[in-house]
Length: 169
Image 1 (cartoon, one colour):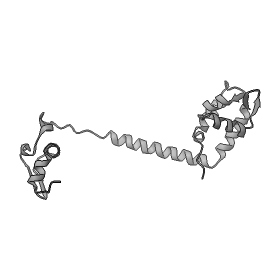
Image 2 (cartoon, one colour):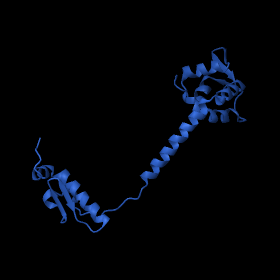
Image 3 (cartoon, helix red, strand yellow):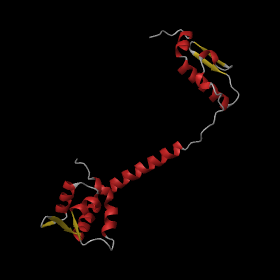
């Protein structure tokens, strides 16, 4: 199946521009490039498909011919499918934006927490081979202690690995 032209999704915008009172009666290649959002060669192909003709060095097409061409394209069954895909992507992006706006939980962290080591873990955290035990009284305290463990692993991984009896590489 050949690739769909990128300008198909712009058909409603193109029709609106061409139906405006200020739209010119004839379109040349640069106008088609801008209107359809295509490059030179594709604009020339579109001009030919719309029944354009050459006048001197310019290639022109009547505005009515472009409108008829677009009406035929709009009646094509692919356009509703493209619009459905566009709506699907917009819905997905809306859901992604909503998930990004989830509430942030502020943690009152000690200033030196980013430099914590395995020996400096807060009380209530026990790390033994095959087991991590954390005692906590609130969800915030649990988050603080989990963060402490993660920072200790980052900052002092060799000590943690040796204390757990894991082989070093």
